[in-house]
Length: 159
Image (tube, helix red, strand yellow):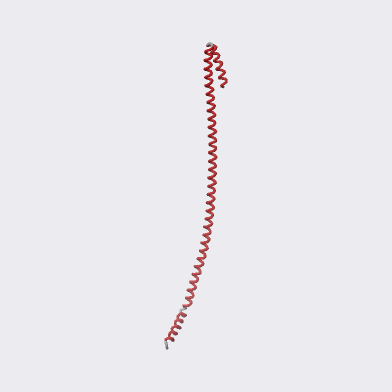
């Protein structure tokens, strides 16, 4: 018997031992388990990808809402600032108008006071001048009477 025969016998014996211990079933079971694990991992990866896409869309939606809200807040702040500026402008114009009117009133009152003082000074000067003229031309009693009459007339005109 040659070596080829013994190699054939060893090969048959090897296959018989493998068949006896059911190695092909174990290999098949192992490969099926591995395929199942891979399938499960692929399903998990697909599910995680879908969740990630949903989260991404949610974050993008939230970001766009936040950008819109920020734009609205900015626009509202700009409108409020413009309103405050306009209000301040109106207040300052009103203040200037009030101050101008008050200054005009003070000027008018000062003018009236000055005119009254000038009139009073003119009356005093006229009275004094009349007293001197009358004093030089007339006697004492008639002078006093004329002076009192003239003084009474001047006072009634002033009032």
